[in-house]
Image 1 (cartoon, rainbow, N blue to C red):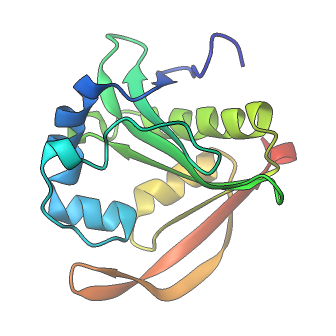
Image 2 (spheres, one colour):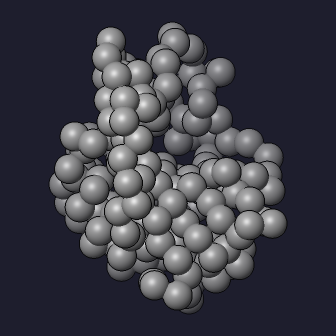
Length: 175
């Protein structure tokens, strides 16, 4: 990886204070999209308490803002979480602003996250979970080289009902 955390279409960089209102408005404030992407409950919060606020570096999570290489536009977020240095694994996730979805950025983001996790952090296994009806994320995972591991039946409570969750993983040698 040369030039930092840069792919073919995107660059991952630290979160800036100026990113917060945009991310809050475009990602968090959409209750359905937030719930589907995170499998978490949505609560009304103000931007000064936003989940997107820049934070201190952590050994357990690496949070990035995603910007396009062309135009340097804020496209969304990317994260490595559940970083486990003993087992050398991490979960990855991403969340694109609505105007950047369907433009081919997702596979590039996943590849850059995997490169960072494996090359910089020395991780061996990357994994991700998505709702079973999220065909776009499943295609993204497969295009990035991930293998489907299985289905967690009715594992996510989202918008009033349980959903199956599909698990994917990628080993460092499979990149």
